[in-house]
Image (cartoon, rainbow, N blue to C red):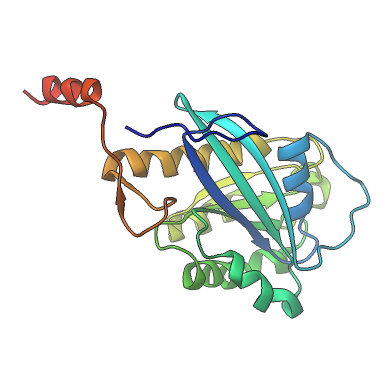
Length: 212
């Protein structure tokens, strides 16, 4: 069984999941991060230079999950820097702005970027942000869902301003990562490759009962 890791700032946690947030400039990546970590929204937000960082501990399926998040700059000039943060990430939010079709058209580029530089086990969720601006919508929900289905991604539309589906984006993806760990017994978040997670005796006994 996994032993909870002690953390003086946020208490103990069972797993540490590292996330990256990617997408075009001004799609609301930093606002999603701030809303998730601090329950705040800034109407005026400076463009990210390089990378911003935040973190929060949540509970998923009875496990304490510490999530560390790197919010990457959307400008091409910083992509060489931000690529270094892809390594070790087990979760990714690929974000577009539902009021700007060009940001949706660039999603495939960001997917390729993540898959080329991150762990192969990375769990990706496609996010259509700024759901609160329905009157300015250029990308329909069905289009986002279709693109997610085509690429095997989770999908949600969010509003960093009103907090709609912001926590759900991280919780749903963290749940998928946790399910993968529990199903395969391999935790890609631990040091070393393909680290096996043992099942405690009670759980093993229950599994034997269930299969016989």
